[in-house]
Each structure stands twice: as structure tokens, then as C-alpha cells.
Length: 352
Image 1 (cartoon, rainbow, N blue to C red):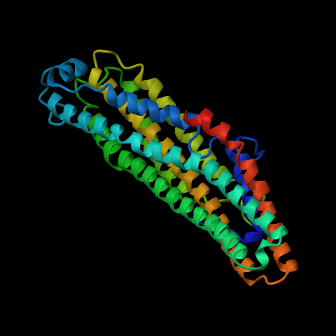
Image 2: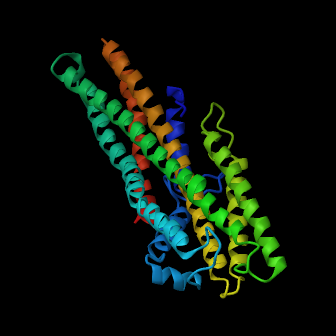
Image 3: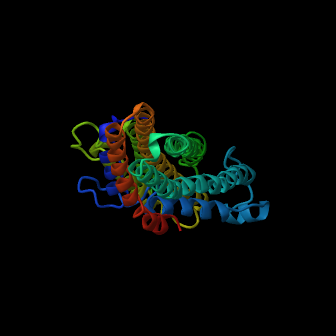
């Protein structure tokens, strides 16, 4: 997480707003403070898919189409155990989702409150209340409180982003790997599809999904605020990261189409293939959301650092001219926080 110079903070806020509401000319990202509607769709599909997985011996036998097969790892009890863990992991999404909702709403609520407090400080300076105590101390408390709020939101965004990143990592490193192992296990057995070309296509696409997942994860974890540097020339989400995101989505979709061609008699092959699709989409969406929260954390970190500087400047200001400089700088923040209010409708469209 980076903290930008105080002179860039307003541009940082405005750039984030333009990306979040979908008006930035240089980014392909859908509107969304952290998660987009596309992310939510895939994550909801993952949760619903987990909820609908079989939970008992009779239902799993009906689901896979046999009672026993003689292949270790593909017996109904072994598939049932894996699916039960998948169902449990899908159930953890609600807690992560709530943290995302809290941080997206928190951006609007905190900006609204901070704007009111900073406006009161500006009015107090203009009325001469900053000349002596107790008025000066009260205005200092309001200003310090704004800095503390920004720091708190920064830390909460980092925590929520780490939670989403862990959610995606668990899917990729544990569940997706185990489902892939079982797909490979049955790839040359009687439980696989009879079409050799279809088998070969599925194996190729499954390998491509793994490679694309690793590429996107690497780029998403290192792509940090390209737009918000000193020159403001590039998109918030750099072109390589956006391209990796789209490439992963494309190969997942291709794999899903091929799985759909598997004959119903090969139920386990079809079932495991669909589980791999929902897992891949969920991990992609969660990591994308974690990246968005990382950007939001950087916004708050930059605001907190700038607020700390203004607190120091206010404490050092002894004459009306110096206090006027502080008030002028605070005014730019109030104007920027008013623009954040527009993201309330983006949150409603994305998160409700």
C-alpha cells in the first residue's frame, strides 16, 4: 500500500471516484467501489452452487450416478467429503461480503462526517474561534478526529482486503487443486466422456485455467495505483492486469462450454468440471475485490497522511494568515468529500 504526497491527495480521491463510478476514460473496469456487479454475480453463483451440493450418501450416489466404482478418490464417500468442505467454504462468504459492504458504505459515511467536521473547522477559523482556547482546542479535536477516522478506515480496508485475498487463496490452493486432481484421476477411466477430442480439449483448457490464474494473481498483487503517481498518465488498473483478468474469464468460459458437452451418463466428470468453473470464477472475483479494497486503502492512507500534516500546520499556526492557509487546504478536502457522496448510488447498484 502506497501513500501519495499531500499535494496529490485531491487528485487521488477524484481518480478513485471516476474509476468507481465507471467514468474514467482509461479503465475498462465496471463501476464498483471494491466489488463490481460482475464480481458479485460469480461469487453469488459460487455460494448458490455450494448450497445445492449433495449432503448425504443417497443424494451423492444419485448425483454421480453410481454406488461404487473401485477407483480410490472417486468413490461417492470421497466425493461427498470434498463437496461438504466446498459447501462449508461457500458458507464463509457472507462474512467477507459484509466486510466489503461495510467498507464501501464506510467510504461514503466517513467522507460525509469528515466533510461536516472539516466544514465546522473552516467556519470556526473564519469566525476567529481558533485564536484562543477553548475554541482552538475544540477545532483541533475535530481536525484530529478526521485524521483518526481516515487512519481507521485505512486499517479496516487492509483487513477486509486481506480477508478476500485469503478467501481466494484457499479456493485456488486447496479446493481448486483437489477438484483438479479428481478430474485428472478419472480422465482415463470409464467414468470419463467417450469423446477423445473432448477429453483432450478439457485437459488443455484446465491447464490454461491454472496458468491464467497464476498470471492474474501475480499481476493483481503487484498492480498498485498506476494512475495515482506524479504524472497521472495511466489507468488505475494497468493494461496487463486488465488483460490477464479478461484472459482468465475467457478461458473459464471456454472450459464451461466444453463441460456442458459432456454426456449426462458421465455425471462425475460433468459435476467436477462445473465445480472447477465456479471455483475459478469465485477466486477471480474475490482477488479482484481484494485489489479494489487495496486501492481504497491507499486513498484512506493518503488522506490520513495529509490530515496529519494539516493537524501539525494548525497547531503551528499562530496568526490569521497561517490559519487561513489551513482553512483553504481544508476547503479542497470538503469539496472532494462532497463528490464521494455520488458513490452511494454505485454501492446501491452493486451491493444491494
